[in-house]
Image (cartoon, rainbow, N blue to C red; front, side):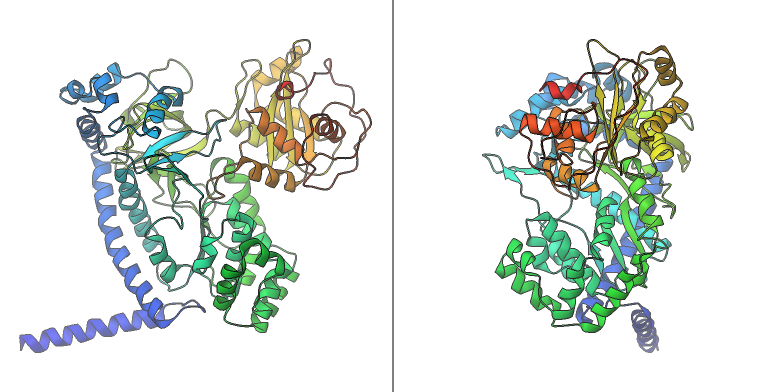
Length: 638
């Protein structure tokens, strides 16, 4: 009797699973075997995600205690490291008030404080910051003005997956986002790391084709063939991603670290070479040359021959110049999973209003080279993303932007206030200022801070103590110039008033400088006061093409997955590279400072490479400024 009941129950369960499988939307390019694997994988992740979400919420309900335990454990683990012995970690770990003793003993740190220890690790010394050792040195994006190398440990990687990605799977499952068997276009690129003498990898720590588990996931989940992830030319790799995403009419989602990559992908869908490759089943000669015959042959085999019907569908979708291209190409596209916060907000807005209209853009993870920071438990379709800090990922402190420089703990925050994050990480960084400025929104489970990322602390214009943040600058640009890409730098002069130059991806507009200057004055009373007194010169807008910003990205180097366009340029080479991308090589007449003709003159004088973008018509001379003209920008002295 019991055996028959068990058998009947098993049969019913199997029938339910078969029905669930058959009801799922599937990729056009999927085999039955990979569809079954994906179905079973999603079910397993759904269960694991629910378990980790329960543990996450439990830790959040006891956030202060969990943080205290984490800090004590980190101090104990690293007590015998070089850094731990220097700072007395052993004694701190046994303190009854471990948090108070730690904060009194340890000063706040920046990369300048950490760099000597990193150099020792890079030179091959062990037991410097982490008793367990490092798995790699992560190269940061350099948004703050310099590239740093930060230790990455196995604990950081496992925490990112277990307490970050698995919780995100639960978030997506609750939204019904796992009820499909469609492929994802995963915009990942093969990094070209270097290695230290003892074999320690140095490069970006973003998940990518270099990871051992990546190929297993690719076969089941991703639209791009293996050869596409082996391409070292980033532009050719992005073309291949776009090609195989376009080939799959039933693509389910697009994934990338930052929203700039999906925007570029959608732009490529209008490239006739994509439709032609699908129509003929063969690659364009230029692409074949750039990636080599072997990978090209493998990719052509993956195209599975000519597909004139799909090529016609793609051309029809691209012929419509209106918004919503993504939805026309992929009618069943569920969402774009990508970070669209902070400096990426304008890109996310353009994506939502343009090619991605009608497709949710979700941001679910807040992370940095220092490790996992937070997870988005309730991601919003409109891009207003907030993140719950993960209690066991880092020990968090909060540095108020105004007032004294004493940090606050999680239970001392005020809603709506801005704080710079100070973290003690699983990678051995102690009371480290990572430079992220966040707004405290609320508490999750009564104790865990939920924050909104606002801007990078180093992204500030400050020639007279006005401290104009990236957020204020972004808002003024949105009002005065619209939704454009831009970067600004400070202009200092010994004999005239300092000020700002703003390079913007736009056509020449004689009123742009005045509009932006007015918008900045309205946004910042301190800036307005200095402008009234003549202590800050009028803001100048230098028009540039979008190609100039792309040229800057190539100049910057690093992985496209990791690149963040800085809004404030600090290094001479950065400003020079951005302007050189727009400079004309034709010998210009003497021009007003700040115009494109002056930029071309600068390029000619200093031997800058030929322009990436075609030269623009020289604008008429600007009206006389309200204060004496400034000399060249500070970086031109180099």
